[in-house]
Length: 79
Image (cartoon, rainbow, N blue to C red; front, side, top):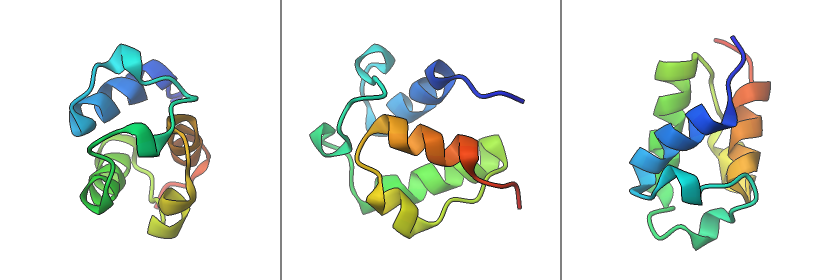
């Protein structure tokens, strides 16, 4: 199953309480007010529950943009 960025952006938007249209691949994660350690855990749960992917916390912490997060999900392996 190919994952579209727009689908991921919609899911991520609900987590960070922003409009999906404002979440472009180039958007810096640190520019999102709700980007914090709890959000990282929530993104890990989203990746696992919705996309059947396991994300390592250190790789998420190294991401700087929403596009980086999307790439982690699309490139990671299923458990």
